[in-house]
Length: 321
Image (cartoon, rainbow, N blue to C red; front, side, top):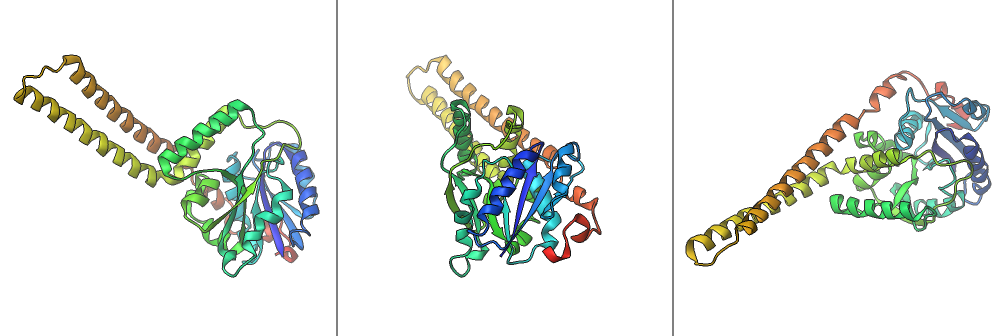
């Protein structure tokens, strides 16, 4: 079986070299006869160490014209190499820093091989353990609660995923992948097999993920679920609107048809709270939609820069196809 390992590298060449060696060691156990590595240089040519990878026969380095972020870099690389990937080939996406453990590869791809029809699945690594600080774990838990509330979907997976070439060829052209990779796999309702995998530790250096980049990443993960969020926002708006009307009618009826006194502050507070809630909800939806439109830079414009290039021209030898 041929396998394509697609990973973004952002000033992390040494970690990738360790990852490559460990994947090559585990490949026979996973039933992989030939492994090819596709690296998206997310520095857009600014990292001189990338030249070390160009000298490796089994590594293809792709260079986007600007920094895309790790998830969109994966999509960019996948779309570029799809012409060279056969339907039966295995496609594995993962981060280069070691937190996606090569030792989990045999278990990750097992759901794609066991029974007839399973080759149409996508296998995702389900995170069971994390080695981050308490603060990060708390923020991640809050993000999961927010994500669940807004989308109705629980997110516990990242970029570590496996699929057949035929699945990648059909799915990766969906425009939602221009926004995010991992959450789009969930949003498209593809047949998914979850494989419990603890998160590993970095091989070298420190994470380049700042709080700002992490926040942007979290917002991007919400974008493929825009329709679900809009429906839930509409339901919440309707609920608060009906509740506000009901309270207003109740106050009017009490004043007109009973002798009971209603404190002025009670009615004013209730109505003011409802108005503020509706304004806040409207602002959230408006800002979210605005953010989606301004950040959704289509990768098609990036791909157009390479129109007419064949798989051979991007460094993939004919015998590897």
